[in-house]
Structure formats: C-alpha cells, structure tokens
Image 1 (cartoon, helix red, strand yellow):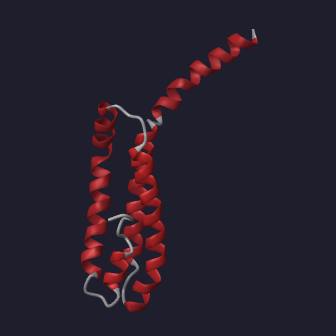
Image 2: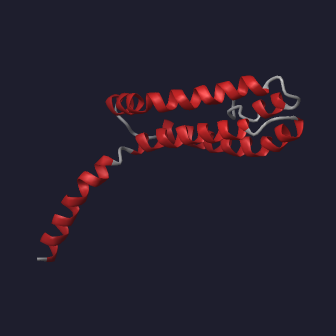
Image 3: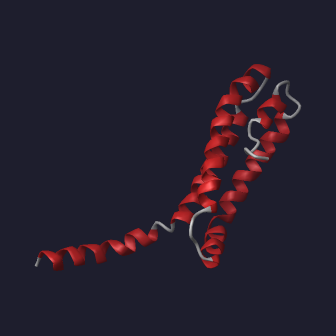
Length: 125
C-alpha cells in the first residue's frame, strides 16, 4: 500500500518537475538574470565615484557568470534541448543584452566608466 501511494505521488509530481525545464534551461534563465543585474548596476553609474563603486559589484556578477558558463559547458544536454532552451529564451536574452549594451555605450564616456566596463570582462579572456 505504501509503495503504491509513493508511486502515485512520484507520478503526480513528474509533470510539475518537467514544467520547470531542464537544468540547462534553468541555467539560461540564471544567465539572463545576471545580465539584467549587470545592466542595473551600469544604470547606477553617473560619474567617476559611482563608476568606481560599481566595479566590485560588476566583478562579483561576472565571477558568477563565469562559474555559470563553466557549469553550462559541462551540463549533459542534447542538441535539441539546447536549441529549444535558446529559442524559448531568445527574446528575454536579447532584451537583457540590449539593455546592458546600451548602458555600456552610455558609461564609456563617463570618467571611470571604462574601468567599470572592464570589470565585466570574462575570466580567461
């Protein structure tokens, strides 16, 4: 009886687990959130002081993106899963990257802005 109940519970949870997507899908969502967080930090840059204050926050976010990238490279996934996840989140990722690009262009002419931009450089590159 207990095994039957446990089996029914597991079967009931499978659709809920599947709805949340694969680990790769979750990682893409995490990457989008990190890019959005970086854009938010960039939006706070108005002068040299705020640019300098943004550097440690940007470095911390970039370290998280680097770690995520390494995790994603090692995630088992089929080409179909990768393609489907990319398609499902293409608009969100494009919007986040566009927002970050706009802010990067804006702060490039602010004193200290280049230092903040360099803080987002991926490690090993």
